[in-house]
Image 1 (cartoon, chains in turn orange, blue):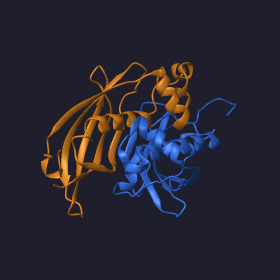
Image 2: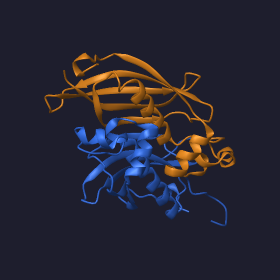
Image 3: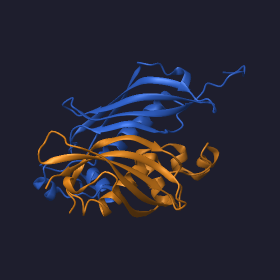
Image 4: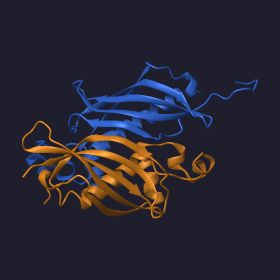
Length: 144
Length: 152
């Protein structure tokens, strides 16, 4: 288990594999982001995106799924305060396969003696190695 | 139709409300954020949160839903978002909480290359006690008002 003390600025972690399907893009969009270019292939083709694309918040949800599967079991974290500087860089389309590269940018002490906040920049990439989304999460770690 | 030109700095809009059910919190968490305090009511009781809480990504998804519905009511020509400056999950969201959204325009500027403009806005959701549970500052793109044509 990695605690606050064990995490070092510059650490890089690569993890996850998430296959994006048309069905899941539409299901998420129906529930949370019912804009035409997230819901319907034809409407997507006619939009500036040229095809069906995932909601940006859906990409965020897929990102957190990969984090919870691969990072949470081995890092003593207890959630996050939020994030800064989230960029939706490129559209995420059906058939894309997403992976994550995370880099520790800064360790912030915080007020509580039993915890610390770590700023982690994550880049979500597609199967061509293109970054589709990036953000800097404020992750709460337990101390040893 | 509400175009980019129609957004004024300082204007604020109510986004409406949504009540969070336990079933909804569990369904989202089991699919996307299966940490025990989001996905397992019993484990959540024993956690530092003392009970089930919604994934922050779920709270943001609900905020997005309310924003899309508000855009529809206003017939706003929204065309996506390049990203957010910040997002803070300020308080846990629990089953039965009713969240109400409100947004304020902070800044507007036109695209130099496309017939769209950008709006930087703050969006906040409060619970039934009036406590802010999430606050974001994000950017939304809107189409520009078409120029020329005699029929506006």
